[in-house]
Image (tube, rainbow, N blue to C red; front, top):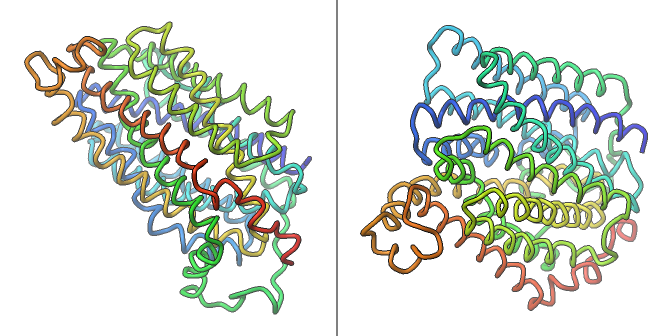
Length: 431
């Protein structure tokens, strides 16, 4: 796993830098608008291009040099950040520009992420898939553990330009690690389906392949439902804490650090242990425990409830995500992974974009007024969540958490999902 670890280390450092910039932008947008809708739209415009670019990116990932694609993706994302810095320094940065730049950054990040994910199956042996997947979550939650708390402090000490400069340095480190290693390409043979240069066929191939395995299709549907409710809660996560704490960016940073600590702890355990023997149990139990933890988080209004519940939530998401990715890596041959993963990713991106589009208006226009003093939901839930600012967001957050819990429970009642690892053969038996 030496090559994979080198690449992973570069991505870890780069992810921390990117999260520093993202967090600073979130605080800037909240300070200028004070609306959950404005923050959730950042996520919407980040997800939106991924819906359209996923299938094309999947097709070219299976054909083109994945090392080059990873570099192009990183360069495009950092270039978008530099545009934002220039606008900020000139005093011309506006909310709509943040959305446009987020769209550009999301497109290149999608290309980089697909190239990276599709390379895992060629860089590590199959028995290490869960470990490799959990290390990806270590990168994400490692950045959550370090970046928000650090950015919450730096935001009031150095200008936004200083935070973006740190992001640029981490990008250079990531590019260097990719340049130093060899990333193998899948071997396309005459027996490989759709190996001719027909992008339209390739774009359809991922969906056709998944439909050929009903268990994988049902797993994708279940995961997409979970992703929808998770994305709604993610979209209102920062507004919830900021509203409950009087716009305290440092408290938000500390809670996000707890999220990172939970994810990192789970990733370390999984990468050492290797995960559950039944990976579908990891998926479903991860969904159930995520929902339970987030329900407690939504109920809480103080740090001593937020910290442990967020720790458990992030640990559970890592268990679910690592187990899910390991299943797909073992069931789809490397020559098809770019296209199949792109289809899977596109559907989940659609769920994410929809969630971020509706989350803000739901919070600002429906749940917050309903939970304010005199609101029609205040008499029912006010004793549990209060009627102060953020109570409506907390109710929406908790409702999504309960939905996540129910999605995980439903998975155990569906045999094609419960026995997906037995029904769908590993790709070694297909080649």
